[in-house]
Every structure is written in structure tokens, then in C-alpha cells.
Length: 111
Image 1 (cartoon, rainbow, N blue to C red):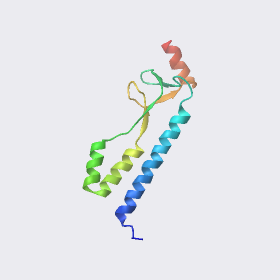
Image 2 (cartoon, one colour):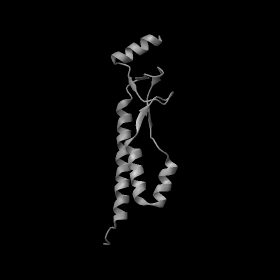
Image 3 (cartoon, rainbow, N blue to C red):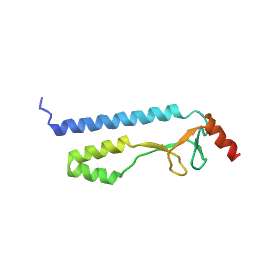
């Protein structure tokens, strides 16, 4: 069996990171959906489910991976760690559950 170079180990590490982050996102999506519009946006008052947004650019990530492995890994890890749930209407973070005291207050103000 051939020895793995550092390049091979970095690729394996990146693949595991992608699988772990995708599984984490799927798990959150399954447990998050409780009922119709179970979250409310504190910025615009939209009722619905948050969307996961990733900062940065996929194009820049691909270019960095094609140029050098280390900058590609650093940028990919940064993108994976800066994901956030955002309102589907205004793209702002900070959606809260409808059942919370502040969520109930926001819904009563809109009604």
C-alpha cells in the first residue's frame, strides 16, 4: 500500500469536514421544522423557516483550491464556520421561535 502524502491527507480531511457539515445541516433542518411558520424574523416580522447562508464566494474558494491547497483549506474552513440562519425575506440573522415571549409579542404587534 502506497504512503499517503500530506496532499492526500488534506483532501481526506476536507471530505470529512464536508460530510460532517452536511450531516449537521440536515439534522438541524429535520429538528427545526415543527409546524407552519414556527420562526419569526426580528428585523422584518416574516414568519417562516430560516435559510442557511454561507459567507464568502464559491468562485474564490475554487480558485484558491486550484492555486494552492493551504489557502483553499483555510478559506473553506472559514466559509464552513461562518454559516448562519437567515430570514428568507430580508436575509438578516436573528429569527426566533414563535413560542418565545418576544416572538409572541412580535406576532401580536403584526396582527
